[in-house]
Image (cartoon, rainbow, N blue to C red; front, top):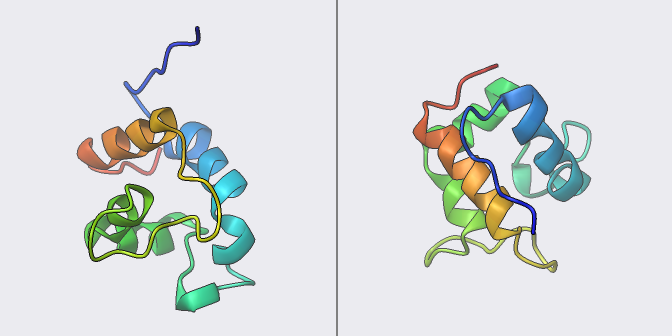
Length: 92
């Protein structure tokens, strides 16, 4: 069994690969579906600050479930993003 390490999450090394795999197909700068761009730290930080990033990946009530039409992110990837957000979403 692989442990899910959520401590000391790095934007570049941990968060971006999750987003590239699961989110950029619809929400990269050149695609921008739903007028949502998650590519680039500044763009992503908007959705961190307003709570939408965590809401959509957790399929919380009142948020559109993302990724749309695909399986929910793994609990490990959700935990990594949540911990990064809880740590202040550093640009590291």
